[in-house]
Length: 178
Image (cartoon, rainbow, N blue to C red; front, side, top):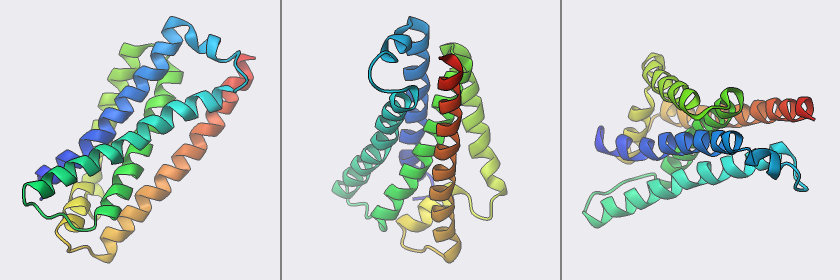
């Protein structure tokens, strides 16, 4: 529970963020983002669609891992809260990924910066009162505390604020490029 489950649940968000970087930078590098912008949607909608697909995929993958674990006799408690936590983490890293993709505009640099940044962010979580991996483990073994619930709520709040800030930034980028 303390090693395998956090690994299985945090891997999908990290991958989702990485794919989000690729989705944005490849559109920029190939010039197809400009082609998409002539459609009756603005840049914010285009990026929202790409980000939403990647952020939604992570909890689905996490749920599949949990189902597979249950088939192998490993009981996991608080599945809805675990999926909310994974969804929030996915939203956070996907927002980081799409923003870096738009800022950098080049896949290799954006991917490197994303990887280092997300690993540093996860490593710096040791300074939190409870590490995200501990939060996941406590939920999974049915021993959450108020702090555990607070961390889930904090992740959801951070995801919402990050998404709102990214939308404002992307809207400004779109306005400047017209």
